[in-house]
Amino acid sequence: MSATITPVDPSGTDTAPTPGSRLRRFVRPGAALLSGFLLYLSFPPRPLWWLALPAFALLGWALRGRRLRAGFGLGYLAGLGFLLPLLVWTGEEVGAGPWLALAAVEALFVAAAGLGIAAVSRLPWWPVFAAGVWIIGEGARARVPFGGFPWGKIAFGQADGVFLPLAAVGGTPVLGFAVALCGFGLYEAYRQVRAYRATGAVPRGPLVVAALSVLVPVGGALAALPLVDDAAEDGTATVAAVQGNVPRLGLDFNSQRRAVLDNHAARTRELAEDVKAGRAPQPDFVLWPENSSDIDPYANADAADVIDGAVRAIGVPTVIGAVVAPETGKLRNTLIAWDPERGPVAAYDKRHVQPFGEYIPMRSVVRLFNSNVDRVSRDFGAGTKIGVFDLAGTKVGLATCYEAAFDWAVRDTVTHGAQLISVPSNNATFGRSEMTYQQLAMSRVRAVEHSRSVVVPVTSGVSAVIRPDGEIVAQTKMFTPDVLVEKVPLRSSLTPATRMGTLPEALLVALGAAGIGWAAFRSVRARRGTRAE
Image (cartoon, rainbow, N blue to C red; front, side):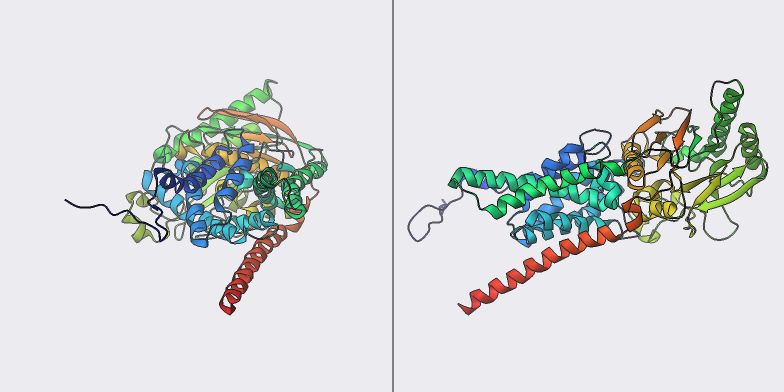
């Protein structure tokens, strides 16, 4: 028979852990996971943008006062709770492995932010520094590795939210900072209420911090409302977005490349017939989506003839999304401006090609884990020129699909004269997942950020026309052939966000870094004081 020894402290009190104490060990990890899941729920297609506020409040509760290692672990749990459901579409056709790997890697950035938030959480004005640390994490995630992956920036979940006007002030970093600050401020306000109930008094400083952390973001958003303007500064343009649809869902959607091309040409010819019959207005130009011609029209005369026939029928400049295959070198994901009289007159090669989608880094290593990498048998190469087409007198900026997630890729087109932005995309490989709605929300944020109309032509949906105030005025259903024809305002003025570029982000990063530095200094000084005693 064996005896069970119960630990006893020197005073003789029983110190064996109780069931309740064991459960309490899981409260903060559970709260961290829940905070991440609430962030996910705040993203489209759900109009629950406000859930980001309790998400950050809960994250603040989980992290405040924690040691650095605990902050990292809790941050990682929050990252998994957020990114695992948000990015599930990445495994739509290639299996769970790539999805889980991507979420696990990207959650490390949230973990690092959790460490930093824990570090600054004992400082005066900690919500301000904590929100700055969150922007450090988002900024790093948007840049590394392989050029970054900014999908899931907090700003992209706020297309329906009250904070959206702040995008025009300082872009996605300022918008995301405001949401995080308000959420952390709500938790600080809750702390002060509890302190008041316990002691009957609250120090003025912490009370001011809590109040300003909540009121400044909300007040700033209200003050920024005049920047959200959809007036037609440069007149209007009537634009048509063609959604031809694809013959099948999934990775093999382009195995019938000619069918995809024919679908888009047919929709364009039908539009031409509707215009002649008076059933639709005459567009000034037409936009086809990315990959609407996966057959290289420069090398294949039959594809060029199909495109040319459709463009001549509608009689206006048309942007074609094509895969261009040079005899040597890498493929190009190219947008071609096709004139009804002169044929192809300008081209834009996608500048930020998608790793593990359009090209495979470390191919031999990745192949060990997933054979789908060999579906990309020839890598795409990146272009270098900024995409702005002159279409019937309108300067149209181009950001192809994945590029819309990157601040610089959209801003460049506006600073180079774009009066309207087009985001041609191909979401057919992601089925009926939430991906297309998440991407559409990005375009709505970009519309407000740069005060431009944004047109999103997609092969299989959801295609949309968005006004400069972020309002969707027309959209299609998924996997349904359709054409949108809308008159949109053209604008040339620049918002503060467009003018300042990365400066607001740099200032917020500096703020977060200053908080981390201050926390480190206080920690070192405290240790030296302890040793001196």
